[in-house]
Length: 212
Image (tube, rainbow, N blue to C red; front, side, top):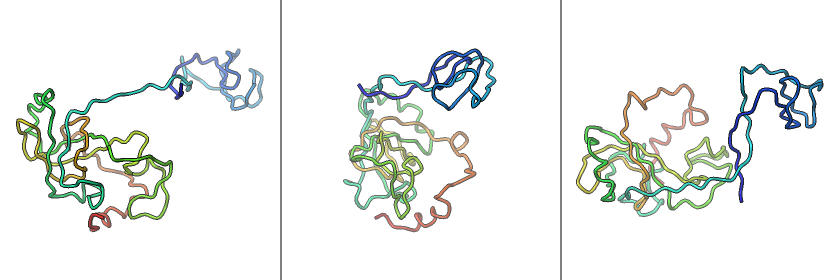
């Protein structure tokens, strides 16, 4: 069975190198050290400090709550970000057993949609973002090709209907399974960014670029 690290906690009198309790609390990067190791770094913890151990990988299963209906039948020629999807209309068909969950949603102008990127195939540690020539770490990009292909979009909520939602400003392909819907609130979600990483100065270029 595949294994993945999980966090656990151990007493402070624990040597990371030899995996054995020592006479004094210390942290050492050298394998097989003991309490007299000259390279040991004394640590001061009140009670516990975390380490990572390995255990069985937990499988997670989600059930879609609905389906996106979009004019985009494939990723080709569709917006790469909601910024490019302004004015584009679509729908979210909600499955009957979840439609009562839509109660009170009509009071919000925008919603957060979590969906499965069902057309995403494979992923890489380093990728070249759209309109970029430099490889970036996957988690510093918005590439749809990810270990867990989950998409997130903030869209305008036009209306709530018996069958689901009319939405606008979309960048989702038709048939995308919807995993969850949450109300968007500027007071709760509208953070002023302090740093924009490698994207600095590139957002305006994307705003002016027509969908590929």
